[in-house]
Amino acid sequence: MRLSRRGLLAGLGSLALPRAALAIEQNRFPVEISARRIAAFEPRNPDRRRFGALQFRGGLVLSCGHPRFGGFSGLSRSADGRDLVSVSDRGYWLTAKIVSQDGRPIALDGGEMAAILGASGRPLARSGLYDTESLCIADGIAYVGIERRHEIVRFDWARQGTEARARSVPVPAEIKRLPRNRGLEALGVVPSGPLKGALVAIAERSGRQDEPTLGVILGGSQPGLFKLARRDGYDITDLAFLPSGDMLVLERWYQPLRGVGMRIRRIAGRDLKPGALLDGPPLIEADLGFEIDNMEGLSIHHEDGRTILTLISDDNFSFLQRTLLLEFELA
Image (cartoon, rainbow, N blue to C red; front, side, top):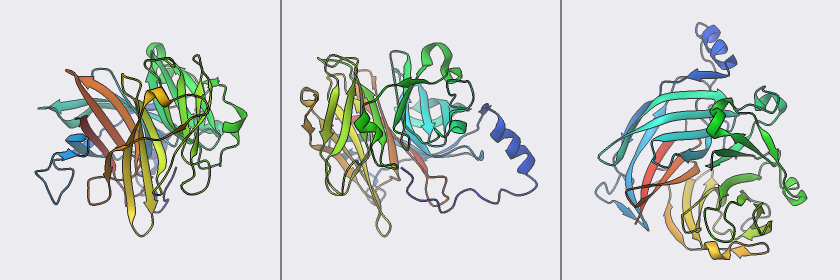
């Protein structure tokens, strides 16, 4: 979901316009990404590393001069954590290598962006399917959720990468009736248990304030709808699964006079089934007293037996916001 459109990149300068316009029309192009390190998650307490059930490893403030860079709402990292894939809510892929030192991210290398392609091979955004808000990659297939149209598409990522074309994933009629700007914000594939291999999607907010939101299980042995409890003004922005099958849900609240907050909850995998009302305890909660922004993407990978959570923020293409990449270890 877009929180604000103030500060959209306007007035790029008449001298730079021809080059910028040419770059925008390219379906695939390199981007040079600058990264400023975040040493402390809580600036007023820089020695603190433990936050709830998570240990802060490090973070980056990302910036890039290309007008397509920003708006990142979905995130995936490879099994070894070296490769990053993200989607922007304007229909673009971002791929890059994460450079780490002493267990902390220090840079992104080899950055490239590419238009997400529709079934015809033309950019998906040209067909009106531009609000690409969620991403997961499992077993060589990339799944992308399109919020305002309430659709899910899949790509043969392992064989074709950013050149893959979208193929539609059927969804129930109830998903098609979600509020226009409160649609599918979270996607994940169940890694184990009775629902192994099923695709799970959750809407940002399907009802009124603090009412449960709608989720769906697609495929697998028990397809169907479920609900996820909401409270304290939080909306759903992403999900990722632990190897056990437990689901971590990333949430975000936004208030014009207070700013933003984020929370991650852990949902027991055994509770995920059609007809269920899911809830679980928070692992971490933070507001603007911490190094957060509009956190919208969550990914999980493993390093030497450690479970690593990576989060990315959607800057809404606003100079008032930042693109952050944060790493935590599940304690």
